[in-house]
Image (cartoon, rainbow, N blue to C red; front, top):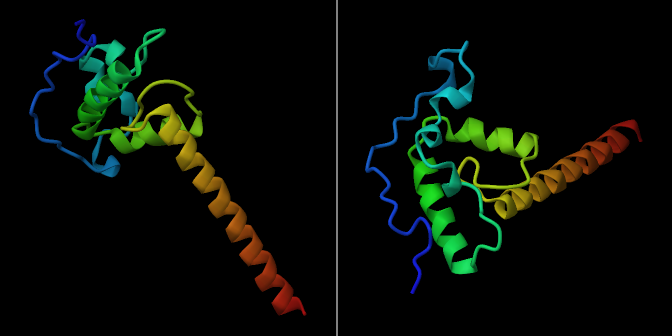
Length: 124
């Protein structure tokens, strides 16, 4: 049986060293510190016609890399703000990012409705 392309990939057991953004060099772009810059790019993006089991395995391996990245939060926010339509960014797949964006939109709408009701009560 063929193995998924990244099933033998070993993710280094390096403890995450999250440095708050305010303590990092503000001149350098966030992605210069990304752990994925040292890993195979194919781990984060699906090859065409990838079988589901291989995709899930690859995405989990990519998420393990993201979990130890000092700029995971910045990466995730970048992918949500762009929005990046493909790949694993900041520990989230494209489908997971769509869910986060939908929840943010709903929350924003709820906040606007609440603000409108409050304004109407004060004015009325």
